[in-house]
Image 1 (cartoon, rainbow, N blue to C red):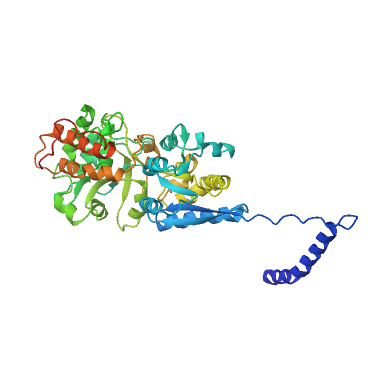
Image 2 (cartoon, rainbow, N blue to C red; image 1 turned 135 degrees about the vertical axis):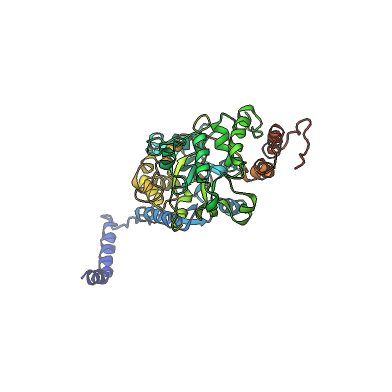
Length: 456
């Protein structure tokens, strides 16, 4: 019956339209018979683009967000543009493609956006639309996307680096029963010491089963939580070089490397040459790795793998780094007002919840962060609330325009910290790492006096 009524309605449409035109003609005449001008035709909707990147599931969720917006709006319509990664999007823009009117951006790209004057601040636009972002969003996320006393992009995701552990290899109940150092994983604010972390690595190492306890990537990002927790500074005061040679940083590294250099507890070079650490973890041969929320959907698909999460271990105070994303508004947006309207829609609780349900996003929206859309009870990891707890420990890092270049400049030296047979020159090595980083962070500076290449 619904189909028949719809067809009947279409048959009557020409007659109805003719009647309306006749009425309009009569209404458009004055008493003297002079025709009045007809109202102008409705304006065409503004055509906007939204640039996003991510997994297939995330792209589908973003498409749903766009479709919902288009269904509710006549003034503007949005087209979704997608890339597999943030780097791919940035490369496309650098190669001359027009920047999307609204785009998902990694915090690592904020310095580039500002330097190239590609974005426009969003705080005033959000204020005009009644968005109370000060209470509903992570303070760390707001600070991370602020510069020049303005909110440059709307915080979207904030995923702290945490420890993923295999619950069969790292059994804290058994460790406690054996009077080994072990954290209280049921605490509302779980926290564990480096001593407990090292004990877990030792407990997970079982030579007969060929398992190792832990792997931490020897990179600036991988070592950062340990340096910061131990009271060190990852960068010098003006961010013109790394700060690993400072007393606090070097002390934290000494403690950390004592564990990471133990060949019995960590993956060997030979093992890593055969497969990356993540693969060993998936095979049930590695007790612990560090990672972000985006790792969760992948690990859920590994048959037979039971895993959970804990914050990064504490050497002195709680500290970690975060993988942050925001929604930015192009300086060349076709309509500043309409683009801001879509920004508000995309960061609304309903829209963010839709993306959070894919499992990849750790939302900056606090309402979504404590909801079942993100926590997903009944699914791994059991203690997903750890991500929310660990957000409080995320340390804001300086804006670096080319973080991959920084990592590449010091990669060999950091790798050697965990692989050279005898590490008896940590002072000299950290000073060299800091000096090499200056070539990226402060390329105009002259090399420090006495700086010479180190023989491996």
